[in-house]
Image (cartoon, rainbow, N blue to C red; front, side, top):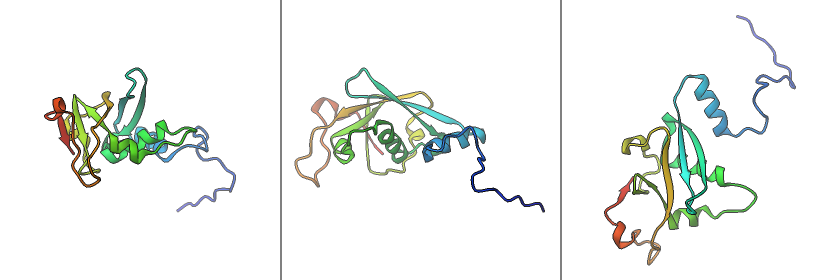
Length: 145
């Protein structure tokens, strides 16, 4: 058995930036391990701009997707994500993704590589414990995940 001692300042992966996020590192490792990476396009509410989120296929859950979206939007301004997720929903295939299980595997509803999601506003709740109410013409178009 051969053991090497690594010096303190030795760079093991010279092509990786020191300020890399955990999610970016997971993506790099997934590619190196020949795992599939899903690219999900998120259209902002203005309808014109969009962001691209990359997630390993085995981690395509609503929780991971939300976290990646928050990181992509995260800039210098502070965003109240509790408010954003409470007053908006992600829409996939013209159906709202309403939350009951944050670890739900999004591949089960047909999400695949290059899928497009968009933000859409919800009608506000009457009280904090009440159900999410959708606009009248959108009631049949939701998925509770």
